[in-house]
Length: 303
Image (tube, rainbow, N blue to C red; front, side):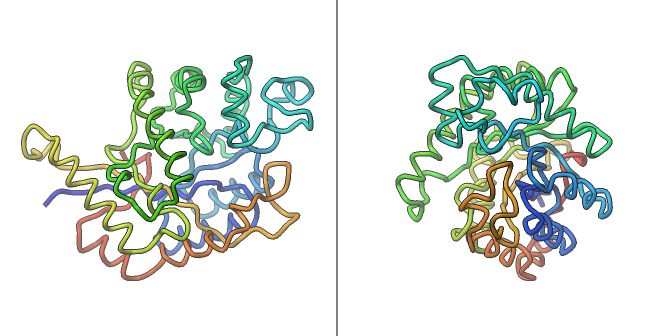
């Protein structure tokens, strides 16, 4: 039987105390095996303490699109910021990039350093909040920072079967397909810098209200089948392990004004969908199927 190593990553750790608590509850229930920390989140220091207390594997969720920078030099004058002194936002950041001029290296390095200060170690993995790390103008700088710090793992959000998910609204699908195209074009860059990532990524088709036990299994099964069809020969004992990252965003919904990365919590974090993800991930039927299917939950440190 093929062995599957599944990394269930809780994103946005550090965003607010309620998101932190929800992610910790998922970890303690065996539903999340890894977390990604927003070091500019309002509850980042608390999140780092919780990770130490509960021995939660933790990496860095690099953020260039929401809230305030952590690099002091950039807080007064930077093309990364709008006129109010905050990052440009999910889509605004992409628009600003298309105009050029953004200096990202200093902020990315500052976030790595702050992560080390908060946790006592470098991140074993580093990905991008709102998938900014695969954008054409970001990917090279991002890869150089990872290589400089010896950070081996990242996320490449190419989800098998995404095109068949007819329940995703077209506007959101358009964004996802843009992320997918950017990710395909990022593979060579990350490879040249010696950066690695799991064999399979899942998380776009199963986000928020679209998360269910059946959707998670459909995504896993479809992804493994697609990977197997590409293999030149059956997996050998040495190659008999498939690694998957499932990106999730569980938590107890944020209650304003507490939370966020400097501007208060956004609609995404206040949504009932955060609780829906939490409740789905801790369902016993999901846990039992992991065991039945020879799926081992792990973190990037275990790869």
